[in-house]
Amino acid sequence: MAWDNYNKNKKMTKKQKERLAKKGMKAVFGKNLFGVMMLILLLCVAFFLLYQQSEPVRDFVNGLGIFTTTSSTKPAPFIDPNGDEMAIHYIDVGQGDATLLQTPAGNVLIDCGSKEYGDDVVAYLKAQGVELLEYVIFTHPHEDHMGCAAYVLSEIEVKNIIMNDRPSTANYFEEALDVIESKNINTILASPGEIYTVGALQLRLLGPYSAKFSNQDTNNSSIIIHATYGLHAFLFTGDAEELGEEELLEHHKNELKCDVFSAGHHGSRTSNSLALLQAASPEYVVISVGEGNSYGHPHEEALDVFGRVGATVLRTDKLGSIVFVTDGETLTKK
Image 1 (tube, rainbow, N blue to C red):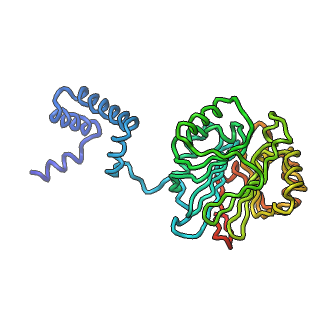
Image 2 (image 1 turned 135 degrees about the horizontal axis):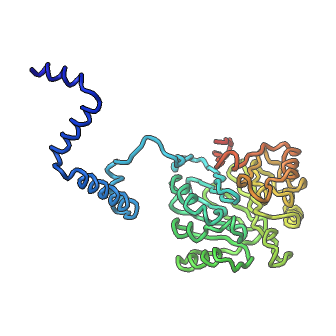
Image 3 (image 1 turned 90 degrees about the vertical axis):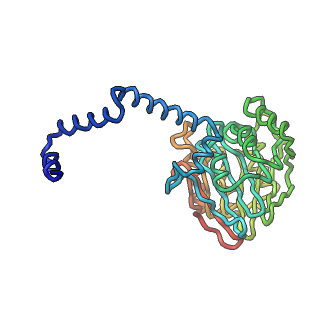
């Protein structure tokens, strides 16, 4: 008999099967099937909102592994915290600058990008296991270099901040100062020749020579950093332009050799002079730049200079975040 029923069901039409399914649903839920389905839908929406807005609920659910996937968009840590390697992350923040120098002894952040990238920068740092920054260096108070400073300083513990003496009345700058004051973060006014160390990482400040520039000349008053780790060096000139580069060459021409040069002012023709690049003689030039930016960065004149010194050019608008790892002897692009 059961076999006969099976054969009959096999011959059912699609409509007959749908009617049979509806009858089964009614048998389970009665005549209030629509109401029950609406209740389930509302409960799902309520749970989703609670999950999004309540951190304790989100932590509990994540702990159950309900939404765990086998892949992640976050970058995996590049160095062993117990090893001897250093990683330099040129973080993609569009038309802006943010660089993480990550060592087993501690971490340094140079600039952080514009306000819209605050979440991205904090997520990137935490994905690298960075919960504490020994130093944060703001090269100069422009929005594309420190627009999200207040947010980053609020989310990540910071021991020291190094800034130049250029004032700003911008909201993002005032907000950053408020966070610095409220968290009582030690603040250092940059001075050329000063050296700061984090384990084997040495940060030497080669600028700014702000006294030679007006308060309005913020770009040329950028803090300039020559970072070394063992045999390898990395040069950061912020947005220093022609005058700032001339001062740099006048005072430190023989101290600029580097393996990686962070292109001045996002690859602008107003920076990146041939004299500077010849003195630095980098193997790589990293250009932190936004895709299709309104400034036309990087300019062809700067790209020509990079080519003339034989440097390999790497761009965040084409590659995303760019990472180098060194143990002090070898240097590898990841």
